[in-house]
Image (cartoon, rainbow over the protein chains, first blue to last red):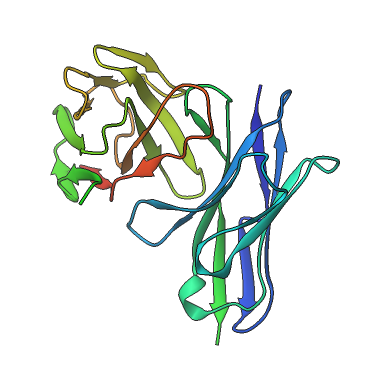
Length: 113
Length: 114
């Protein structure tokens, strides 16, 4: 069965600092992987997705993620945090057929001025 | 504009009452999903449907019911059998079949039962 683990339920960074949100997956077949962002009391918005075309995936708002098969990881990074990046971030893995997603528990990102 | 609408944004009900949450999409997606979100627990799948007139239970279907009579609509009923109905409910849709199909989410409905 597929699963996703997000390390750290809360991450706090200073404005301008590197953002690193960790995601590890478990899958018996090459997965599709996604990162979503959720602002308070809103739905989720897709940041980026990995579909096996390239291991480094660039998304919206300056975020990117690198797929590392040997580490079964898909960590999300951004070189310089903005106050507007404060939100909850979810990593998800999908089956190769059907669109059903398995979500991690989420990581809340705080950005200090 | 294409997207998913959920109504209402906030919903208040008395314990023992059934309540139906609306979800409509105009993205021409075959698949639709309902999730429940509680603080610190991520998203938990309640029901999903990959085609009209068919749906499957997710991880926490007890106390909920759905219908899928139209491609555009996937209403969720929270019944009085649901022990802890107060939560944030999210509806999503996606294409289906073989491929990396992201889900598109609605704005959510916050249900409070007292």
